Length: 401
Image (tube, rainbow, N blue to C red; front, top):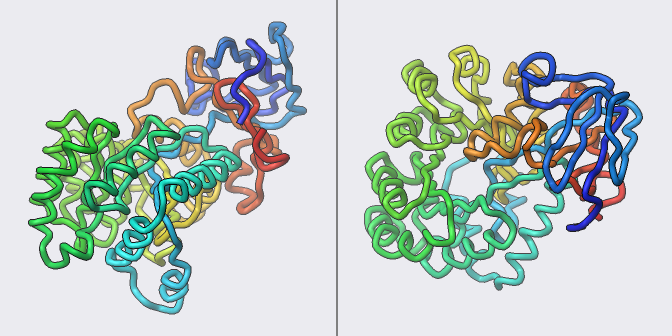
């Protein structure tokens, strides 16, 4: 990826510019038409009408194409080895998803070298970038031993500052039937060893994984070690995940597929983001979250791709946007906001997810005149160019520079 370039870059002749800054344009998305944006030293320095754009060291005439903030992927599992295509095929033949399949990936990940794991992360990040994701969170969780979780965190940290210690994904094979013993090891060994290499602590609070008490213990220990909590919750059925996330002030609770009125009200009265992962529900033939109920109640919603080898092997947030609009009853504007500004809120980041002055100069240009085409033309690789830190990084045309 290119890391150096001109000090200032102007994107001009933008058909529709999504800024996510209501003070800069129309509506929640801060829409401007016939617009321009100038990047300087890696941040947004100017936004306005194309005819008024100041001179810059480099210029890109977008020819009426749409420009959006880079997508913010706030939920991914990229440190793994192997694949589970046959498990997917079995689900498509009628078998029901259960959390136990994760153990297959644990075995493959433990057997892989650091070089193999890092190469896989790089491959998936390159793929993510081509579909417009310029900020990507990355979880551990396929090591589930202290040495393997430590190396997973260290490998993830080579690629992103948004490293999540998913210490409690599922009990690994050697702890089958002994979840309490595994949690004790996580508290005594894993979190102290791995916390210096992570920013977040996560737990899969779900049947087949960890119950409320076990999840509370893991998250509390992570917080005590300086990590910020996140929760996998309410994916397979109603459960305590949402309420636990709100109670502990988690940055986000992810999946949120099965919720009741009390869960929705709790989220609406909190700062916890509901991160919806429709790709996982697509891949498991689960029902989709009721995004409309969450949004109408005032819950902050993010969209994530949830790339992982078992239940959602996609890095494409445009794909998730299309599902969210078609099957979760989000408007195109709500879905785009959720995949950009919503993801930024889930990561507690103010510098990404928008194209307001001072924000990081991460943007995508679509081969389309409007952001509406992301849902209107599902499955079409519309991301034409990607700018990361103000530098042309790549896109679906021409690969990554």
